[in-house]
Image 1: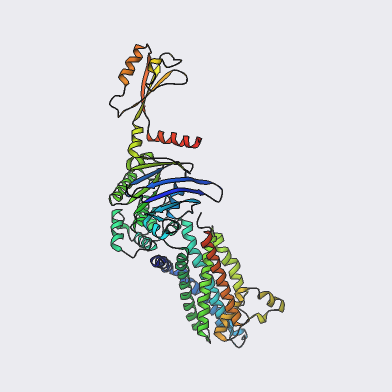
Image 2: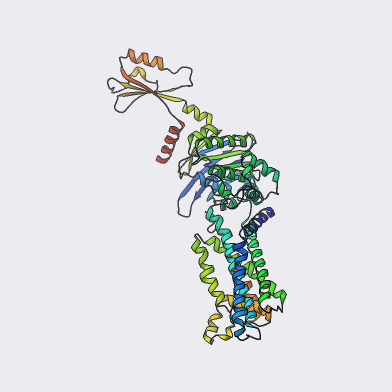
Length: 311
Length: 253
């Protein structure tokens, strides 16, 4: 595998108030991937990306971008990065065109009107280029922030909650924009608390909770976990224990003994449902009802976060 | 050195001035001109000369200083406070610009604006009062040093302020009274002895006195002391800036 575009090692952050926002984060981001950082509010997502972008000072550990240290070689690393913040912070009285030129200059690049024009067109803002930013809708402002972040041609783009408070249609538009950027070769790191968003776009998913990275996995592998299904059998008469003949079949009994739970893999060649049901009949175990439930990424996420909190 | 970055900040700030021409240029020029009209032409003729200088002309350096100081302060403080207030500061903090480049961009623009204002006001004064400048080079030196120093000071206030009230409190309640009581409208010789001594503790006195010396060759304190005072004040502001750079005070968490 080629060198990671971002390498984070032992990164910690404790704010002046004593609050520990990050606890020794290790993470590599591969060039060209879309990485989704999932986590509840206050988990440390924004702190993590703010450190990489230079807005927050780390307390310990190191981060390199494109092989350069974010503190020692901040000019090199920051010129490789574009950041789209969570808040719609825009210069109300400026025009989209002027603000994009400003961003490009701020990031140390000589003027390139053709690139700015291309970017504004790609984000469907070219028609609005000379109007005041305050006249733009929320969705347009969000796209403008992306245009600004892209105006200096970064290799890495951070999107902090890109679809927070955005309606469904606009969210789909945003996903399309992100896919286009990936096709252009930009590495994208997005934070979100919408599982759906990670599912729709990411190549890999990281889950952060209470300042700890509790999971980093290929989305495909997570999907496989998601592929697990549970069958719930409501028993006609409660059982005290699971009969020995069912040992090793992955069968569980609910605490009150009224429900049998069977977990199986929907992707597997054989789910084992048919034989289980006939074996139950043979053993004289009768049931009144049967339901199946698929564990969603959301559930996996919630259980991971709860485990993290319990630790 | 990120020259494109400095230039982007500078041009952005100058564009803001052009956008708000009425407020940033016309208004201070008009209000200062009113002083010339009232004190220079109307009342001035009834007040006796000070050190051989007509009263209307005597107050020009002080008024020029007043406008330069308050405008440099408000321009630079607002320039850095506003991005903090609306949240666009994140972009500057994530950009490959050093703190000193940010300072050069903002303070450079605020200084330029103050000097443009100074030039316009000086020209306006010429229309109303008999003006002479004995040491033009010294006058320009004072003008430039004052504009830079107070722009820097304003920048520091803008960083420190976390609401609009704080942004206003130093310019309105500290600097303006100091300028009025620092001999803008009178020579300290005209005060009782006790108040003369008190006034010597007002740093603005030294700036106005030196500046007036460059016009008419008369001063309340030696011009070298005045130059030393403005240099000291500039040094203090630079030290404050350097400290913010080191600690990230109110900028970085």
